[in-house]
Length: 255
Image (cartoon, rainbow, N blue to C red; front, side, top):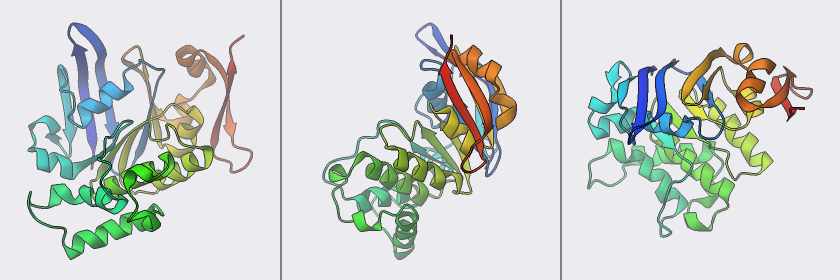
């Protein structure tokens, strides 16, 4: 499903946070949203998943203004994994993943056999079936993140929105999670901090700086050393990764 942001701006009180954002995510495309802290990445994502109403512009999902869709219909079209997602300590991992089916069920209906099959498939794909009966709160940070991504997968939304999904994960867990994201086969808009992760996993890159979109396009067209130094204040080398040949970004402090 295609996501289009046209002229999107957000003000909090009288302060502009993001302004004039034009961005598209094509069906099945992975777009990484990059920018320094405070550049407006999370704010922009919140306008897409309807946590913060834009003060200007429009967010279109499948051609419809997402802010005009009924809540249940909007939830069917996009799934979200944010940096902070509160989950009650009493829920098991399987119960958390099953929550992804809520937009497809009545408010009082129980999970059907079809729902359970979808949940099982999502948990298998994220390799967390073993944790089904474990309390969510007892899992490690990486395990909890995989459970939450499985919940998003069980939602079967054609757009997945990720806000810093690798935060607090060890190196292996980061690579494993991004590998799964890369293979979801749906549209993905992901805010990332790590330029190398973005280079290796995104089809296109969008870069925010001081609340404005300063570059957007194919990965290697955008992740140029001059732009990286301008936006992030570091020197960069961009080239093929020595181990797998994927686009690779190495950075160092500016002199």
